[in-house]
Image (cartoon, rainbow over all chains, first blue to last red; front, side, top):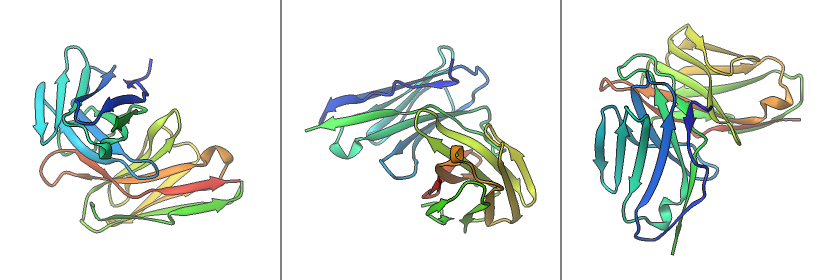
Length: 114
Length: 114
């Protein structure tokens, strides 16, 4: 079993719809959770992070964390063609300013269609 | 942009030759990381540094060494490159100025070992 699992996709959603991306993790000691967006040939870009159970909203993005069920999700509202990318989920065992080692999933490819 | 540059951006080398990749940051971050990204494996941690001359191994450290002689530079060395080390290499910094542990990535180096 992989430590961080994501459906590889592609996940196809029409423009304007809500895209829902999911991630499960196996380490119950995980404390910090991150979503990165990666365009083809580019580096990962941090778009959301969440440390506590519940929802965290930032613009069109909402991260949801459920530690009891060991999953974290990313919702993208009003999806745009520019959101088409691979989304990487990452987790860490620390949530303070000490050395944090990220474990990544292999990513979900999102396609937003016109 | 977290003030991270990587050099070279592209390199082709032959099996058995030594290779050094450089990561340079301008914002005085204490923590720096090297990851590699391969299809089907996602991003995996090679080595990280928590200060000048302070480094530790990550998940896939075999065949790699690192050095950090000053805050702004973190070097990754392949002592004798092998074809299995063909990959895209990303450097990252952890921005803990605000007490969190978010990581931000450099532009990457694409390395091909023939």
